[in-house]
Length: 346
Image (cartoon, rainbow, N blue to C red; front, side):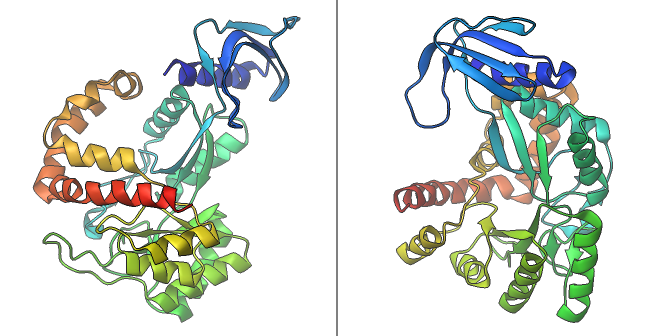
């Protein structure tokens, strides 16, 4: 974890003063696959790495960080987050979803990502009135934050999964095309987030979802405007429909069954990335049994006492009462096997 902390420290210093930084005697992982370099010296000028050497580098006016016993690595990217502070309530029940704007909570969360070495995040669905002002502040250099890429409100259908008040509900293409054009013009999302999920698993009632034709229309329309699309999907047949419709990324792996070789081949051939989201899934699966993992130093360092209490008590009870913990516990073996198979399949 010291590698992450050192990387985040350098980011914060660079942001606050734009001063030159010299990191001395650090073990360097450069992200290229090469072996670690012990005793490296790294000089950062402004926002660029100026020099890397095992020979001494003169500090000049640079701030000096002693990297002895620590590690330095490139900033990490979290490819599926929902920055807290923009909405509350159950994502499974759209009518219970409540938009909100808690800027302080959002900024605290963003600082938490920096603390663990995450320097870029993709917010895969949030309240547009919350996330895009934060993105604007970050890009204007007014906010200490990872780089923010955002989808804004998700795209679903009326009564569908994730169809809360901030979601764009597209029930017919004639009106949907106009609404989508307005969303792209108004929000300028970095990517869209579509939801294909019929639910109906483990006792949940089935809900309507986007048709294959609608997904294809949305994806192609957005692509023509330079916006790529990612999709939430849980079943392989729906995922294949997404691939055939031209989707460019998946928000998480297929969870409910072991995937077939043909699906893995289709993903590999098209080079479609998948965000595993396994940390979140694992937490949901195990929190019912024992929430003590929230005592991990990283959680303690990046969550307030109130947030820790909420996750240990209120959120835990919500996951138990809704059946989500039990569901995810059943799905975890499939998710793990699928990720292993995807990796081995290229």
